[in-house]
Image (cartoon, rainbow over all chains, first blue to last red; front, side, top):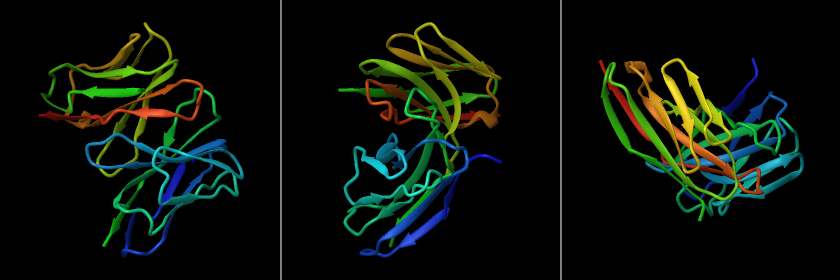
Length: 113
Length: 111
């Protein structure tokens, strides 16, 4: 089955710790994205990548970092510099950078204790 | 400023009671408008893509339409299983990777 997987589904972190969220896709899509979703708000773009070894900051990149070493993988690290990291994190991908539909993974809910 | 606004924030319907959800947008150079369904604790599920004013798409009880300023998601004779949050997103301008999302309409269909 083709699709986007995110792991883990739930993640708990203590304040001051870095944590990495996984996103893998087997759709052969070029572009991948990370969004953050908070209750009552629209999705906000954290980072995106159009090709391997290249990525761009979105609207709320502070306190986050990413890498794109493989086409199918786009992990997101939430660092201790992120002041309010508790949220639902969504990974998405599109076939290319043109007018293409974004497809989403199941999400990871991160809770900072 | 590019913006996407969805209304109402929440909508309660009786089973079989048809209604419409609105997505209005102010963006430069619309490239595509997308509708998604999102169930609690899950990722958005793609429903429709609309590219130009006048375009319509249908899927079961759902029909999406597009004008130059807004899109409607019409729900005909809804069932309880249609209960979800419906998200609208717009892709615009020269930056292909910029998708603007509305905050969603939470639909509750009661039997």
